Length: 288
Image 1 (tube, rainbow, N blue to C red):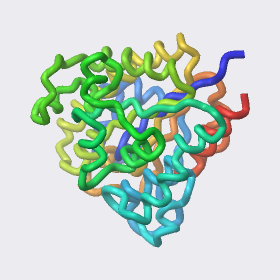
Image 2: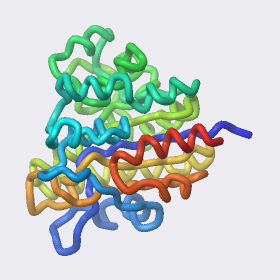
Image 3: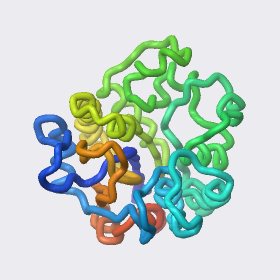
């Protein structure tokens, strides 16, 4: 029996759109995503019982560890994790949990850096960076981008130019091919996309539509590749934002948990909040 594999797409700042708000989440803009939301999705709670707007640092910590981070630290914390959250992330990330049972995992994002020291010495690091460095001691860097063994956070590599990337740019469809190849080499693969959250904060609906349309092209190319490889797709977020363009802040809306592929009911039936995602993935991968 083939060992199952999961590709997790983390889309920062993507909530379920409530009725009657200006939103770029429309079939004319992102038809594949809208179909997945209609057919393969359950909404999950991002507030985790803590007052206030959900934020990135605590939400992502909860998502990638299964720990109720905002409850632990007493509030939703924005941006990048400080020492208290790093102490939760480093020993408890999904990578660490899978390593403990002998399963392979990877972070597919490529960094525009020459050495791991360039990444390790960054003054602030995202939750995903902290998790990858603590579990693997390294991340995919510029050399992996040049050889198509990593995927840029923007899919096309265009925004890497100001940071010294001199290679070719690619299409969202090519990025899907590269990510599919990476996912076929591991039991668990994570890819992070955060242009959605940045666009939501700027509040320009035309920009938001362009970003979602590009991501939809990527999704549309990726889904059949994962079907061919028998890989389960899970797409989720840490908090709402881009779905409601009437505000420039995060929202308290539920976030989608899209699960598509072999074994999807086993996960969809067990997720109600951010804290359920990590244990559901680990449970699925260790039950087969």
